[in-house]
Image 1 (cartoon, one colour):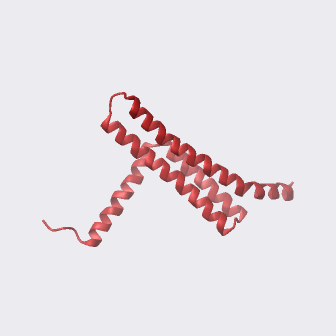
Image 2: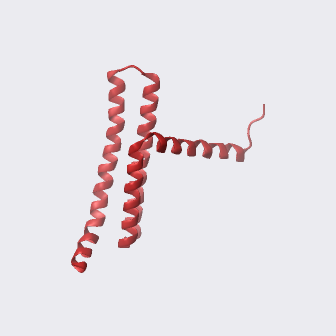
Image 3: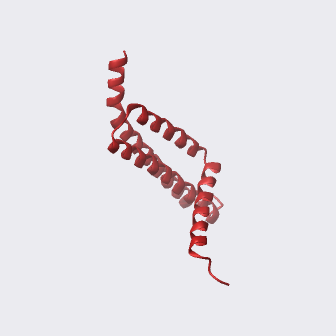
Length: 128
């Protein structure tokens, strides 16, 4: 049996990656909240005309939260596979993964507040 060509192999890699993204969107309600929050942040960034550096920070934070949620889902799925019955260590593993998502989200909110509060303050001052 011959190995797939380089292009076919890359195509398959991307297909598997997009299948993974689709799976997390189907199975994780929290991912829908992350998407909604991301849209709100991007609209506000556009509306307030944030700087290029601020855009980069916001996009990095959005990506960090999404990646954390995807890893969390992956860890939870694998934990359920290897330990279908209740197990203290399996529960701890899931809690740690969820804690990573929480820390990523808290960090993203903090960065968002640092960026947006001055814009909000200026908006309120000029509009009211």
